[in-house]
Length: 277
Image 1 (cartoon, rainbow, N blue to C red):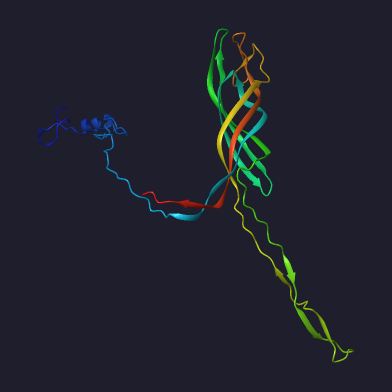
Image 2 (cartoon, rainbow, N blue to C red; image 1 turned 90 degrees about the vertical axis):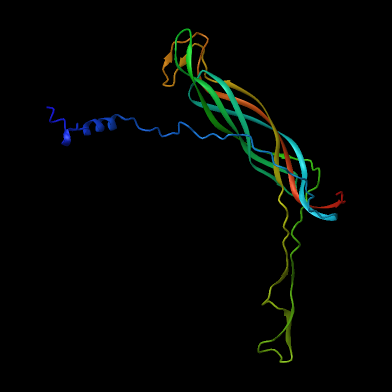
């Protein structure tokens, strides 16, 4: 037995022992246990100095955005929202106004507005309950409530708008020979029908555009199918719960949105600057 455990020169064979150690040795972690940290996390201060801008002075003509109107538009929304599972209560609602179209129809003062209100509703849905308590999961539903409206604006500054010039037609005089049967000394005097002559043109106007200044939401959300004492879980099974609790899946939303919109147009403006450096 001793001879089997020894190799040449009387030394003990350690191959099986080394193999066992390699197998049982834990693998290295894939993340760095000792990350390198900077000695100073505060950026060093750099020196700066004031420079004079390179500008031109005197009477100039500049093309700049000009405010045509600034209006407070009120949107009245009424929508129904259905949840994918029973809701015990609504915890929080976050709203964002998104405008997809804001077009001033020149030469009128009609402003066409289209968009939607993005609503993220956080709610509690029952998981299990007893007659003394309800355990819920917090989930969220994101929906878009669309709207479309037309309103009139009062101009602070008049928009620049030019129509196409009048199209005018004209012709040239032409003297032609007459066919056989007419005197050779006679000629036909008329307009040259082989030509079409016209004076026309195009006018390219700057398209007005909009910017959102602020929004203000006032809303009321009311459950439509809530019954006190009936609590259901996500599978639709009725649970035992405190008598005052109840779940619902549909709400009706009444919301008033006040949005301040600024209408602008690129126009050429005369300016007069004086050197102050």
